[in-house]
Amino acid sequence: MTALSATLRQTWVITLRDLKHWQREPWGPVFNILFAVMMLLIFGYLFGGAIEMPGGGTYLPYLLPGVLALTMMFGIDGTMSVVTEDTKRGVTNRFRSLPMSGLAVPLGRAVADMGSSTVQLVVLMVGGLLIGWQIEGSFLAALVAVALLLWLRLVMLWLGIFLGLSLRMEGALTMVQVLVWPLGFCSSLFVSPETMPGWLGFLASWNPVSATATACRDLFGNPTGITSGLLADHAILLAVVWPAVLLAVFVPLSVRAFRRLD
Amino acid sequence: MTPTPLLARGVRKRFRDTQALDGLDLEIRPGTVHALLGPNGAGKSTAVNVFATLTRPDAGEVRVGGHDAVRHPARVRSTIGLVGQSAALDEALHGRENLVLFGRLHGLAKPDAVRRATDLLDAFGLTEAGDRKVTGYSGGMRRRLDIAAGLVTRPQILFLDEPTTGLDPRARHEVWDMVRQVVADGTTVLLTTQYLDEADQLAEMVTVLGDGRVIAEGSPSALKDDLGGDRVIITAAAPDDLGRMAEALGSAAVVDPDRLEITVEAGTTGGGAAVVDVVRSLDSAGITVDDVLLRRPTLDEVFLHLTAPETEPETQPEGAAR
Image (cartoon, each protein chain N blue to C red):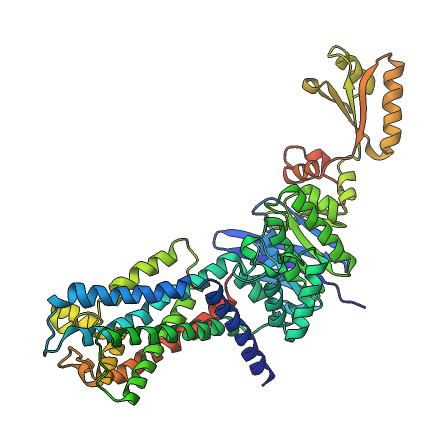
């Protein structure tokens, strides 16, 4: 019990330290929000007019949950970069030389990043409502959708911590920053997998972020663009299970990577 | 009785194709500064990382403050302070906030961590800088704050991994003063360095490391004595005198014609007696000289000598070699 309370206390100290970074250097999180707004404008106004929805419906209500899920997914980049920075500076090694729990440093980072992601999400949703997006579902359903988005963010966060701790070569961060694009776009985030060539549509519908985006569209009462298949019937279940599986893998791996940095 | 701050026996560590530590033995006496001296790649940082529980050794025994570093890393962590090679500070935080952060993570309650941070800033001349972001600090200030962060919980032993690498001479002296202050307060210090004068300045004991092994150990002056004691350097008044001088001084004299210098090792007779001998021999041969200088061998000479034994094996120091 004392071990648990010590871990929680250390986690909180780390969380406050990470939050202080946002306060001192707010450009990172602010830029993340601007980036999401930019995606919204590019796809909503630049490409949106040319995009036809399978099963009918307009593009903006389809797009918005996709941009929300993309923002959560691309959060991996921010998490990984701060973890990489700490490791490069030797701050991670100093933490490791202190008599503290191996869980506290990654967990504190997780709590802080979840906080900033919640703010991001709220700003984007308000922005969406201002440009004409509508939530057709119930308030409760909308809350569940928000929870699923944060659930996705949580996975991306631990993945970012794991990659930041274990990929030590120069350029690892850039590699991840590039790879998130095909991984993010080969999904249902911007276009329905049903409009893609068969094999690509198959891959896109199995992308974990597709599950979150489709589930959110369902819950917000927006068009899903999916008419059949596993994703049409069980999107919410998949949006719960996918991140759970990934978390079960990457949380222990991250704690292990923190202890075994060598 | 306080336990030996650090005891290592036969420590080995391999990284892929390099044997970083190859049977390292080390014992540090309480309340001293002990220097690990060696070039890049000698295994100094790996040794510190093993002692600080960051790296698991492949073999061997490490006890820090009486605790086994492999079996009880958490206990070791509560007795040490680690100051790594790069200043491990949070750049976005103020100096004071950094110290409070590490103090709190060490288990201090907030008021205690704040008080300790204030004391450390005072002790190391950082009070004014304490409430500014670390980003704006000079290299020397950063290093001093970094060392202060390693002292937050009054460790039994402080590890300093190349504390003055990259600092200008003034900042170096400030760090040296700081280390002396730390030891005066009763903390044992293990420092690694590739600067020979740094070990000479600070350390009571020096362990010379090469290829992950101890190649010599002793006090700085003992290491120098093993190398033939003091040197008498005689500068000739004219180039023509060099030959006659060498003749008068006997076979031990080493002639450097470019600098018009002759060097004589004092051996076990001691520097003063050697100077008298040299002057007497030259005087009776009727030779006048420009200058006579007595100096101790530098640690550079010790080091070159120890790390290149194959070139002059006959002067391998006795008692220092392992």
